[in-house]
Image 1 (cartoon, helix red, strand yellow):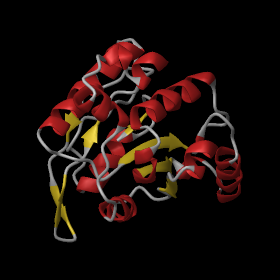
Image 2 (cartoon, rainbow, N blue to C red):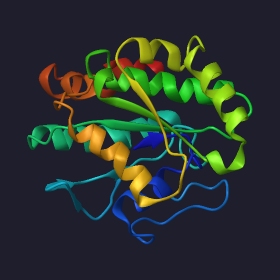
Image 3 (cartoon, helix red, strand yellow):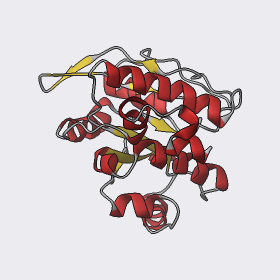
Image 4 (cartoon, rainbow, N blue to C red):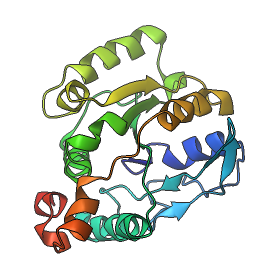
Length: 209
């Protein structure tokens, strides 16, 4: 699960696990997540689900390149162990009035980390719908899906968008169920680090930060 600091990644995971204490949640601008945290696994439709919380590239305590190293290290280890991701959730607050340079830069690194092939396994999830009216939310979805250099291109290349309109386990588990139908696809950074033996700075994401 990826997204900006404070976008609600940990809250989303806690709802998916139906466990409010699965992960610590930050209530200020300081990030609580400066490592990749694995939430307790849970069963969903006969499948064991493991969700990972990641720090945002806009982390207040670390640089973009430090955050990339933390995430890449975990992804590389998983790939070497034969663990393949069914999908990546990218969380975006629908309550954000505008999309700034920080959000675009964060998503740009995310895109490079995933690569083109695995975009079909990316789900962009909008949350915090309780902070907007249905009309405002619908208008922002329209803006987000048509915005160049942001979500538009990713959606055209296979990513999907889903909306977490209620803060309930059922609402989030619906998103997880959709991801479970995916065919696991290695991320670009995993193939670059493991298959192509590149250093982190030589990867597409490494060159983006």
